Length: 237
Image (cartoon, rainbow, N blue to C red; front, side):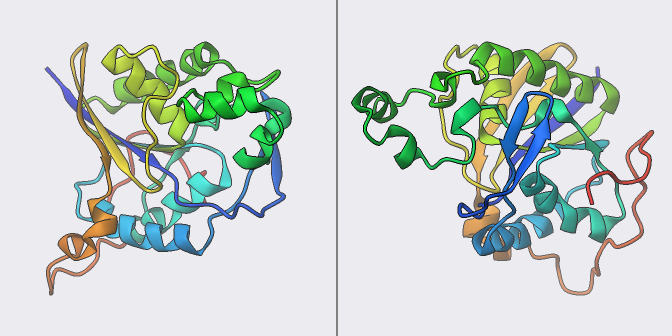
């Protein structure tokens, strides 16, 4: 029976002052780049990924913050990634690009729901529902698992997407039940038809980066790795 390790990686911290947007099948969505903190998180994440065996497949959301989170790893290894629109950020309609404090400002009911740990995206007028999010996310990740055959699947995406898939795996109906840290790794083991969560929100590469420094004299993995099976030219750069 084949075993696939699914690494769900959230993008690094973004530039919250960005006014950049992109057009998606769901509508016009906020598309900020990483800020300096996010770039530092990526510098700590990349060595950890480099210490792993080459993944069977790599998948990334089309949003800039996710592509920037993955790019140094792809450049270092020469591997390629598949851009998956179904792994894109949840659509929040007219709230796109707004800060939470501005969204809840003057609306005590929204502020109370936020304090009561309700998923904000599901409250957005005209936005994507939790059901709609799961309906595109779960099949996308399951396709990646099927295509991998065996080994590891790397998925660089967003906090809501990670919640959608893990909620499906863990049987949790809530749209958001935890807040993945930026550049964190959550891991699912897929064995045949069975899915089990191995670890949530792992940030040890951020808190203890020295643990993930390659041993002296081992060199880097630049240009020595084969790309994922069936991968074409990189779409993530």
